[in-house]
Length: 278
Image (cartoon, rainbow, N blue to C red; front, side, top):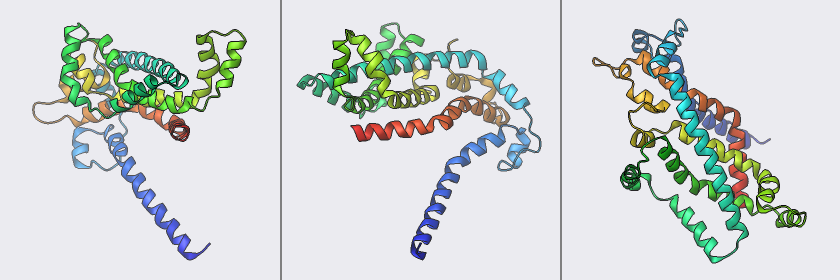
């Protein structure tokens, strides 16, 4: 290996190392300060805790009403993601197999919808949901489905182009109806993009604050992010109670962070494969 190539590799590793430190630093900062007292956080926010005290995590869990908030967030996430994946997969498959101008126009409409900022339609949608009596958990799920369809359909559309139509024709000859053909033959073949769609949409919905704030607000069915926002003990009158804020944020972030760490390979593979097939 030439000296020039070695220098290039060393420079690349240094740059990647700095990017990794920059990326991981907020997580480290949040983690170490979740086990400290207010006084210790103010005195040495960068240092490791002198004593790893789980009391602060327990107190934060009580303040954000952890169990009901997790159940609500989990229910909303699972139902929304299931509907997004099911509707997107069926829609994209039908558009790919039905090669007509209508299908092309519909695909362009879904693609263009990804470019519309949520803020531009936020208030009209909230007003519409209120008039329909859907400012509740059901209305929130409907809105998540609406906003999640465009990107997921775009990903599935590229993937379904790579599924041989001969397999579907063989299934029809064997007597399979359209639903059997899709769920038993076609859908299992696009597993990588399905995993990607599930993870990306679940991360977005789990961490979302704005839509639950607008639709659910301060009622009994709060998500984790709303519970964190509305917890009165986390907004002290005489300053911020960091000994509760840091562990509360850590509790909200850990579940989806763990899922991403273990499944990040599937995300990258799915998106890369979809881009190539598209």
